Image 1 (cartoon, one colour):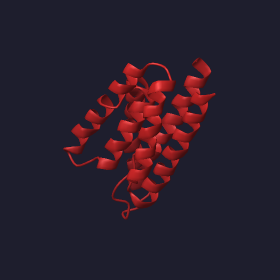
Image 2 (cartoon, one colour; image 1 turned 60 degrees about the vertical axis):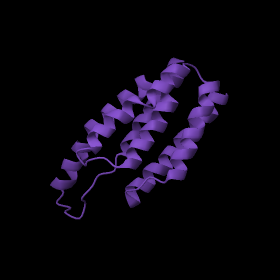
Image 3 (cartoon, one colour; image 1 turned 120 degrees about the horizontal axis):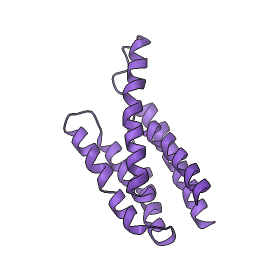
Image 4 (cartoon, one colour; image 1 turned 45 degrees about the vertical axis):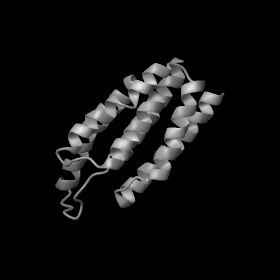
Length: 142
């Protein structure tokens, strides 16, 4: 029951971050900090703590490589640290890969719609959707 409540709270904060990212292209540090706190609590309550610690490093390192090219913001990196800490490196890696594959598709769709005012595409909504899918999968499997 504790795990379910943590998962629901984490997803709520993640979807708030996604909405903010859509509207302002920024992810508030307060939301990321709260998600990190939930991730740390999860280290003691949920299973596989080693996987979760690795999870906060690996996906963020991948995004850091993209950051050097100028395509990713610091908020996205911090968000993936929180996601990795909560879900672990296996889930976080799949979540990140799916989000990074779908984001350019959305960007092409927006450009095809001839919306030149859109210069950037938020990553957080895609991360949030795939986190929700991962949570449903974890509930069904565990």
